[in-house]
Amino acid sequence: SQQGEEDPQALSIQEGENATMNCSYKTSINNLQWYRQNSGRGLVHLILIRSNEREKHSGRLRVTLDTSKKSSSLLITASRAADTASYFCATDRSGTYKYIFGTGTRLKVLA
Amino acid sequence: NAGVMQNPRHLVRRRGQEARLRCSPMKGHSHVYWYRQLPEEGLKFMVYLQKENIIDESGMPKERFSAEFPKEGPSILRIQQVVRGDSAAYFCASSPGHPSTDTQYFGPGTRLTVL
View 1 (tube, rainbow over the protein chains, first blue to last red):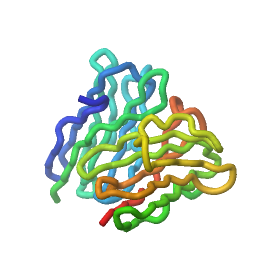
View 2 (view 1 turned 90 degrees about the vertical axis):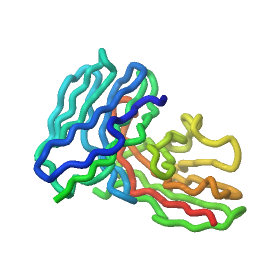
View 3 (view 1 turned 180 degrees about the vertical axis):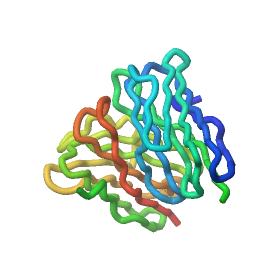
């Protein structure tokens, strides 16, 4: 399996609920980034978390990073219908610059 | 400050034709990356360029694909003699400095359809 795999592949929740997505990777990294992609559109950068950071917040988003488990999670609190999108994590291996994307989590928030 | 710009947004080509995809990085960004996304998949790295230099093209198919980032003008991804399997969304990203420390900002993508 490739570096940067998201779990679950698909998630459907009601508006107002929290959504949690996970990302696992295989090698040491410098940074991990989360992106959102609306259907048929480009990627929007959400958060970058560095390997020496454990948690970052941005509005309703909370990202954690556990380098010992080689995993990260993205939490969206109080979800809205507009949060419906695919969410990707991207990791860069230490010493390189190529970001490796997972296949994404497709989130659907029902109004 | 305009974001990363790509054109065209949609491109239709017949098998055997050439496709030219353009990417203008954000102002002040000198690092450009190209990624390809097949349906229902994540993005896959193709090539990393700085002005007038290809830094890493390890993700580029060996034949028919080429990329450049001239001193003046946009970065160009060229696909010669396109085949149906080239149909995908091609995304360009840029960063101001070294990619291991800087966020990559993505353009809206070019969706290539090969008939």
